Length: 573
Image (cartoon, rainbow, N blue to C red; front, side):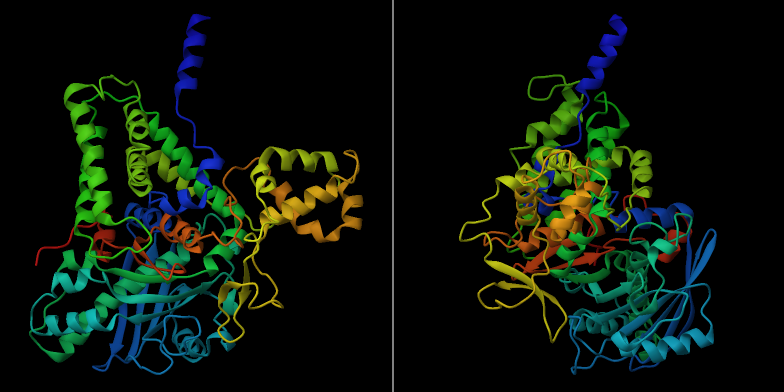
């Protein structure tokens, strides 16, 4: 009996995943950093592990930058093709927004090898965009624009037989910037749920992420190609510089709609992340455990990355401040490794002790960086969790349940929504709508667009209204009867029922409130979910960052090389 009791005590001492009331606060979500489970990192690790073969089959582009490129992508059990149409930059109708009508590159990711008929169909349909229709085997349509200064500088340097100046490259960290990745049925592309879990790109966002990586490769291939056309003595990109170059990305308010429309996916991603962190914090390690050396190495890598970061951050913490925080964490870890004591104690769970010690002593972004690196100490567990990330979009209504059962869900899981003051003067300051001319999601003062349809999910207001109407019915009344009288609650009832018992699906926020900061939830998607680095804000609405920053080249992937490829150091000049 004593042994059972001791085991039970040990289990209770293991750290638990953080509670939803902490994790789902917008400020916490905004502070989270990329992890091994983030889309770009998890997918790149998968390609390295499986040694995907990516190569150029055709590169018919002239000295002006006009022409066609075709790539093959061979996974262990499946083949894909990427068709890219290049054109010289034009000042007319060229913009990073979705209202643009001219791009420096348009492309399509297809299942199977590219045929001439598919290439010509894409050439005809892609420029039409909203009026265009893809081939039946198309997964994603994409668009990108050059970073003119960095792109031209790189071409000129390579033409002279030299490498581009690292300071120029590091000012943006990309040659091209993604301006659109459209799939999942858009324009006739294949729906992602139809792919199934055994498909090579069946994981969450994998088709889009592959397309983004191919943008990076195409941009590097293009500058080398244009340099060769200009000079027989042109130099190829140094592989270290090629790895350092990512693909730029800009995101805006539409990602908040994504969070609300895909609650199961968000819950799955954050649940996997928080469970992985708890598992890593619960490791019982001695001071000479090699995993401690790995953590110190990763912290040093993150410190160097932050120390070299040339970006300016207006809303979020500066990289210099984060580097200083991580220096303190690393010093404490090194001291424990030498002495076996952490602030005078000899912890049984040193990583949990370390995280707890610094929880209120360093910036939230610094703490989340530490937590993200702890996950690297349990790679097999993390990769298994990453492979299971997903979630159906459908929210099923169970009308045969009772009013009392729904009341219990609200009382147990939505007290935060009931506690918000939705009648105050600031609670409904803003409204979410779609621009008639640009078709872009926007958030504006309600007083300026009083007739607009609010497209945002007013979760706290909806829960409060639902609760007030439920209170007029006995607990044993079936919801079918309740909804006959109050059909306006049909969607919310199905949402609450479908997500019951899951902790991380909905941010704890009133998105119409005057104090709500939209960029915090956009950053959740960009950084934690997508795995984008160096995300900096613009007007508190847009985020700009770099995807696949430091990612292995196609040669590296084919050779199975690239462990710990993220947080790249600037290459030597």
